[in-house]
Length: 462
Image (cartoon, rainbow, N blue to C red; front, side):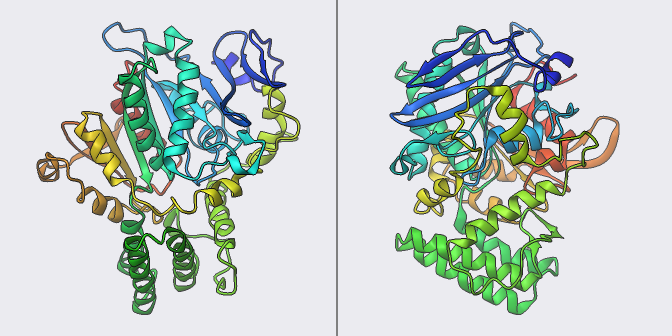
């Protein structure tokens, strides 16, 4: 483990270095524990990936060691940055070992998706993806490039796991991967999909905000009436196919929720956001995206322990543009981590409010394992909304699933209830208690156990 953890700050001897159009596309650490690179998924559109091979790997012929592909939300949030350093990668934002890293259960593949996110970039503005399906096509191209050349990777089942808007990417990608495998264009084993606090049905989420906050005394009747009124407007806009207008109304609703609740944190409704003004009514609609990004980053920032090491502050952007960019060696000098993320969101504004319930149904019908997990105190993708879209599934086994009793879950010797679990055939649901939007950060122990169960990791009992 020491070698893996210290590799971020030590000079690394590289075994592989390829170039495409002047851009270095592939590198590998001396001990083979890490690989990273760029794939040109379309001309002038470059996607960055980073693979960690687990030092905890258990060889079991009857139970192959799994790989987790992690997809962050946003749109425009970086998996290489947020998921990796702020949630469950081997190192935290202070480059210190993380005891709850998911490497204990699987290899980890982080991707800055779509192009324009994190270290990924486009050379022309017209190349940002405009739909979730386009994002899935790019990701499938990346997976073909990575997996088809590596027979060792092909032996490990791939689990597509996601958070927030990443869940919409995950289900569209899983269908694309399923098709590519069937057509023999992609050599991998699809283990399943896991949707963490995922934006699968925006309509159900915006209708959940007002009633949920009223029930926990965070807004009053006036706030509830205002929020329900905008939610109804969004419902009609979606019905009429006015998706851009619905995205603007989503921003308007967030504004009303913030004002009515004295700035509740959208990622944990028990907290105040603490940094965003409650007087937003004069702002232009496009600024709502900036406000949402600030809420996203500030919630995670509140979880950090400050560093006593000179030069390390725990700031994610400083880390990714400093020590990590230096370590990776292949990020072009003119690329700043996350500089194109606003463009990513803007390009997807039409798709942002579109549901992906039908894609979940299709996966279930094709026998793909689908896991849904939800943090109890999340607001943006509240459990109330998640349960609502699950009830809309047309899956033939749904009623049997809904009738199953839940099983309480614990962690280690601690007998405090940490979660509840329900499962039937290939649909599985975890209710994670005392967790907000970022389950791996808020409940690392139960999240790690859950990952072991989802992937069937040989290390699940360790």
